[in-house]
Image 1 (cartoon, rainbow, N blue to C red):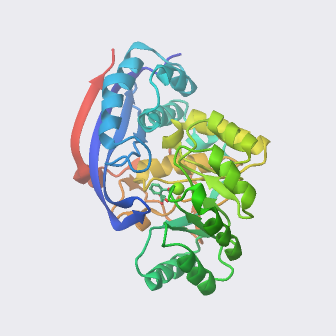
Image 2: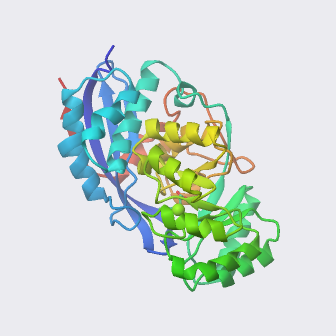
Image 3: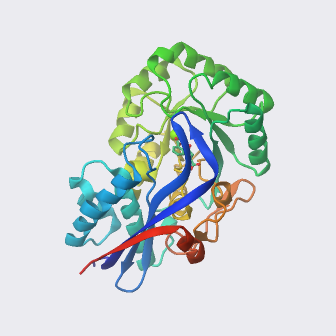
Length: 372
Ligand code: OSB
Ligand code: MG
């Protein structure tokens, strides 16, 4: 049986985050991204979201490269290759190197479509078991630490299960110290987005004094080896984000001892099939795992929730409430927290519908590619 794709539509959206999000590399406030709609011949629709930003500060992909790769390579490949299960998509896309965020945007939409065709919630289709997802929060760099501490308090009041703060060179120990003093027992971690090098090793060792859950991606965005040298010198677990594009990267990091925790993002690894493989490897090798975020709108958020139901996601991730990011999200219902947890629903597919009024306010362009 084939999935019988009828048409793929790329909707380009512009959405403005409630709060500018500052990392060691710059600020994100306006998101320019795509909602992928894939229709079949029975009128069912699967949705995916592209997560690349307008500029390539996080990985090499951008909104523009995502469009180029989807339109000129990935959609034509699907038009000429009928598939019968979403797990085949990764292989169809294998002839295109890299560009994992473009691949994931389409691949995840196909998973949603397939779940709807077989009338199952996506989380059930992939074997998810956790029906309550512990939410963490990732807070951007603030010039004023008092403001950061106020924000952390607000999130603690909403019940979030752990707090991650962004750091950069010359904006780290002093902030960590103040936050730790304000919240002695808070599950706290830091994310450097590759702000350091091995020359900073003595400085990074000082982080061990603050009982951090982990340090996320301190070194090179494409490095795995140097993180293994650093991890041997630190008591605090390292977590890899930017460096992980595939299962092979996770195996390498595990075998070299480069980290003790993996931040898994659907976009970075090219979609749900690869994410499930990484999840299964982490379970087998008892590697701590959590689901990262890319400041997604509702469709991407819904996919992250489905992924997080898998049993190996044993630490709170970055997936949180719609209202933390957006004035009006593009899904119904919006994602909310109850005592710091997201309740997973049993609706079919990704479990959330498009809120078409909100959605159409943000759409700036729309192109459809028919199949026949
Ligand atoms: O490094 O995990 C990161 C946001 C954008 C790009 C990279 C990262 C982040 C976050 C926030 O930390 C994740 C989220 O809240 O969606
Ligand atoms: Mg990160």
